[in-house]
Length: 446
Image (cartoon, rainbow, N blue to C red; front, side):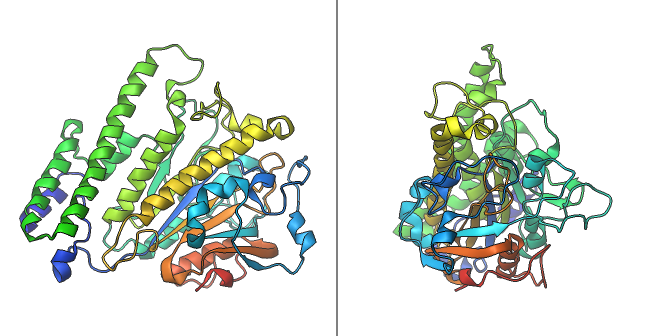
């Protein structure tokens, strides 16, 4: 088995790692349970009255770069931490996962004048460098959190980080700063992968396109030699794991076929924009989960969509014609119901991935979600006002390191970097501070 596995690793693509099997005990290929971190980024903020507790009857905001505080603060200025008993309309897809998440409100960032609001809110989301401290650039952009964590957490993983993007558009009207949240350093982009097939080949394929199925077949053949030593439960686990690999292949075949058919029709926008958004996002999410599960990486970023792209999407079943998320956000008074649907749609995709992670068992009996800090967030507190304060943040997973099931409302002016510092230290990074942090978020720590 060792010889064959060595052969697989030399094929030009990463070898698939087998799931943990109790029948193998100490002989398992897994040595301990790794800590992981992933970030699920939503563009253009959210509709505040649907997401934030206490704002359901608030006036729809107007203006630009506002400094709104939640009405909940005015009702209870001493509020800090409460049990997360009732979810807001946008958060209802997480109803079965309340004991696995924390809603964290009141987190702020500082906008650096001189660059575009949307571009800076995405590109600097995981950087949070203090304004005007990065020399030679107009962007407050430094090495992002994912790479700082990966410097420590990557261990023996083939990929130190993986960058996923669900931007299927080909009309790159904006700069790279609108479409990426992961950076090796100032001006050095960590390019994201938008195409599921390209990501699959990057993770599992050989250099030859027609051989990409062979890698899976060889790994299956290699693993079948283990069957005689597996108990019934492990046999079932084995089948489920590799069925998931096969299902991803099937989904990609369907996606590829759909692209080909749509490309023959004359649309006003790229054909890919008409692919079902939910299927596309979930497929990319499946690839991310498998990569984390398999040990291909311990750190990933997942960007649901780009900032400010005006090309419309046909969201699954939401609208009868393609809609521009950015365009709707600047007409919130008239488009409030449509925007609320988009926010809930994005939350459904996040909930899908949480449930997927919760269903993956690890060697010590915990789940993949228990061992992953998986954060939902956006670089804007509200898409219509472009405000950089009161960002929508949900932190899931983390196992026994994290106290969950809470709504944590931070004092006004708390830097978002405080949460990133907390997560970095949970991931084993020894750092005194991160960007403009002023301390940790103690309430999330078990």
